[in-house]
Length: 110
Image (tube, rainbow, N blue to C red):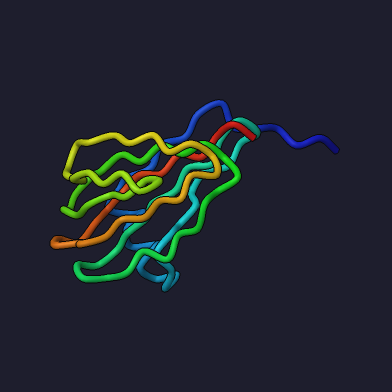
């Protein structure tokens, strides 16, 4: 039997947020196909971001919240509707989180 990949999918952010909350984890992967993985990442105000460098290129889309993002010792504001690219292997984390963060995360380049 062969596996068939979906030709499309749709996901409501509010539903994903509830699923992530129920999971008890900060990150919820909700789509995985050969070319990419997509997930929802949430961190509360004042939280520490425990991320380590990843093996894949990554894109963050800031849905809500306010913080700072540090990538390889460069520091920048992170605010709603911003998009960030982080190369595979780059040291990075969100810090100084002043408002709860909700981020859409896309991993690719496998």
